[in-house]
Image 1 (cartoon, rainbow, N blue to C red):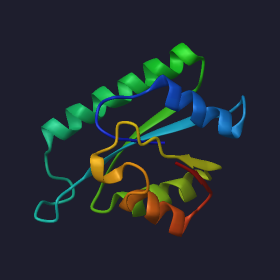
Image 2: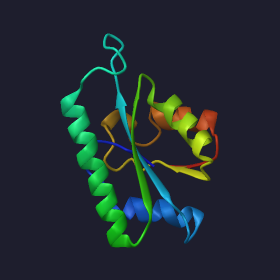
Image 3: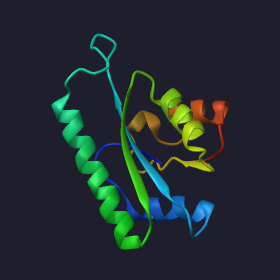
Image 4: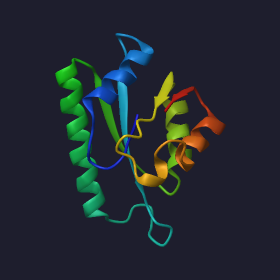
Length: 126
């Protein structure tokens, strides 16, 4: 489940878990897109703090809902490619893309959603 911004919905985490069953583990991914003019490991303190905050919110929301959640911060130049690769690496059953709090360009079928649907390493729910 990719996370946009800092607003993490317990409802989205619960919906993601229901898609794969009661024993599901939700992998909440915070993607930091690193601009091409910076090295991939460049210090980005604002984005890193935002990622930590969002993932802590995801952990708390999952705990309140009684769901196991694993969290990761991933740095990349291409978010879609990274999500697909991570889903394959984790053996994910479904990618749940909640767009409620996504940037305006990603609501509905934005570029990221279209890329996930084209690559489709597993089921994709938007």
